[in-house]
Image (cartoon, rainbow, N blue to C red; front, side, top):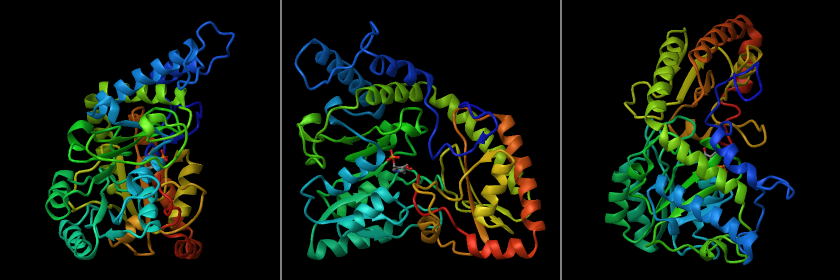
Length: 410
Ligand code: PLP
């Protein structure tokens, strides 16, 4: 196990993943003391040499990010991460865009709660968590009868299940039924794994977060295509071409760009290697009694590192605690901001509400190994034996804890 926490097998890469070496190296000069000859600490908004040096770093980072995301440098708006990018995309800034925003029912809370907060509509998904084309079209037609559609937001890949939407299909519906409404996609989970210029091409607005792909926490980007207008959500000094005020997080942006470039370079081999590990894990865990892959039978494409399971005979909370006792870090559905316990809106939306099924999300990453898979299988066998051997204790905790820890997503 990596990351300095030797005793854990980390199976929660969708929540966050460790800083990659290229990002750490790239960020170092921006965090060095001023006495260090290589220190770069300027404010890129200034005009003197130290400031211009920082601006150069931001400009270079912007070019790298644009190249990997398949857009022009001027279309990249640096933000504090996926949550801010989603908020900016959905609202269109301050004041918010006119009209009614629309999103799918399994979006991350950064999209779903923003949509609800500004009076938007939520559209049903299928059994795999992909937006229902018919339901989307109906909603857009209905809104169009009395108002305009402000924006449509459909995630590239779901953070709990890993299932993928077909954005070409979504864009066709939006273009036909609500022409003029921008299409936003939350590509936060997709970014480490998919060819973004290809999959996100139909979208006008694309959210990405650095910490899911080996960059630092607290930085990300919203791609805003040239034809799409946004006002700033954070008004301030006019940074990011007036689309996002505030002094740049220079170290973070540089680390983000380095991680994104690194991700793009090793993507093909990593996807192959990690999906083989995930498939092995899936078939070994699926062979255990009462363990089913949640997407089984749906035919849905999914991210290479994701394995979502439904487990009989244990509560989600209990299972996580037992797995952790055996050194495995996982999550029940998605990780949560506050450790809060609540039902998963994603499982609810795909029609899974059996209180006797515990959700378990295992997500592999770039540094996952065969030994991690072996240890997870062993830990799962041990945990299930313990949970199911617990008799009435198992039953009562099952009732109390099913679908827990799922409410606030990562
Ligand atoms: N969107 C999705 C799909 C996510 O998985 C996350 C992660 O938590 C976010 C948005 C929020 O990103 P951030 O943690 O950078 O705010």
